[in-house]
Amino acid sequence: MFMTLGLGSSDTPSNVAKFIELGAKEFFIGYVPRAWLDKFGWEVGPNRRTMGPAYNYSNVSELRDIVKGIHDYGGTVNLAVNAHDNGADRMGMVHDMLDLFETLNPDGYIVADPAVMYCMKKWGITREMHISTGVGCFNSEAVRFFCEEFKNITRLVIPRKLTINEMKSIIDGLKDLKLEYEVMIIGYRCYFNDEDCHSIHSGKRRNLCGDVLSAHFTSTNRFPSNWKDVVEYMIEHPRESLNEGSPVDKFRKEWLATTPPPYPNFEYKCAGCQGVDGELAHLMFQTCGLCAIKYLRQIGVEALKVPLRGDEETKLNVVKTVSQVMNAENPTREFCRSLINSDSFCNSKFSCYYEVPEEDK
Image (cartoon, rainbow, N blue to C red; front, side, top):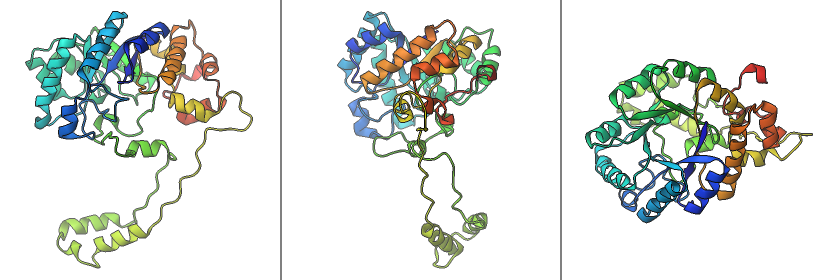
């Protein structure tokens, strides 16, 4: 079992040396050239992470230095080209980027868009390819399709919302293939349909998923009971729907006049808990899958993905913690919780990335 860690432009080869010393052996990085930003802006990215320099490299020399540094320190590196889709207007620039990447001699690519996979095949790119979580392979037959189409696939990044038993089912169904399996272990777990999501991860404002993560985890029905009748009227009478007093106009006025209930206070604190405050642990780990590592190893998962970017100190602490669990002979639930040292974090049902088997609860 090994760890794969995300890097951003603030990470230098010296940072990589620290990460490797603490247990990270593999890295993945994104690249967004300035020409891409000038043409498409921050809102559309080649890897769904265009939120600034903490998430990507944009300077070719820095990109080249970090790839070389990773290799010099004995690590491996994969380049992420895992946007869910790419229009024809972007594919030419994707081709240019991949031509650049090939000169860097990366160890592989993480790809989500089947169109890019087919183009890479056409362009003669044969390096190892990882099926991104963005592909959405929820069963073994979907994985098998891609492996038959692309012989250079060596790893599946399992969708982040599957349970351990569901992962096991996929892995057991692919015993005849020589594949590695990777799962997210730290970071937020998308509460939406991540693989089919076309929401924009931009730096302009908080996104829908980010808004929900900071709010309560319930939805409020603000639509009146007759909303379907309004929709049918709008379809059948498009012109009349624009008139004042139409069902659509009434619906709009009523909806705007309705004030949604305020978000309840959502805190990780609890009276009498031991250790650090849950909010502090949440800032570092967001959502935690440490307790699941033992079971992930048992079902055949080799790679643990830590997708954190940005602050070096936070990443160093997280890498150290994941490494301790990953290398422990029997990392029990109690052992994992002792490393986090926050009862209030661990006691919140929203803190667990995966449900661990019943016998360890």
